[in-house]
Image (cartoon, rainbow, N blue to C red; front, side, top):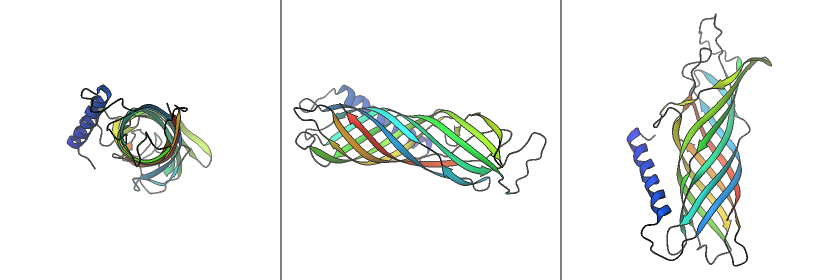
Length: 246
């Protein structure tokens, strides 16, 4: 796991690269290829929990929608950089404790309460993409991309039940165990494999499809008077991104 210094260095490096290629102060070739990418994605979440306080994590419905700006970086039109924004909605069910106001916090591993959580977050993907063929002379091009993605928690909804009866339902404040600048900010590392169509004289709008994997660097948690204090959650996400570029 990255320490704080490494996170800051990686973030500043990626941010400087975005500024450099967005402004292009030293153009090394002719007119660059520029795209705006819009896409949506069904998402599968993979969750793990602190097993001393919770068990049986199961992913809930998840999806993402994103908008990115992409431009070429080299003469061969095989290397690109992109930056943008992504809304990620995901959730997890698990079994844990529930402590009433008038009871002792007894950790007896009963885990008799069902937790259902939905999480809303804003991601800021900064990615480098490398195509296996030039986009200027190929109709279809496979590619690979790697990225560093700051993530920001927006809001989270939690429902707790037992034997089918609702016990608690509220908005909770999720925090990262290893925060970056704020308790609501950390990051993903991402890897994508995809294929895209390219522009022709008659078609300016292209399509793409990619398989994307995001790995979260830090666990996250929430503090309440009814839940365990160390209920840390780790997650990674696999998505099938489908969209258009114009």
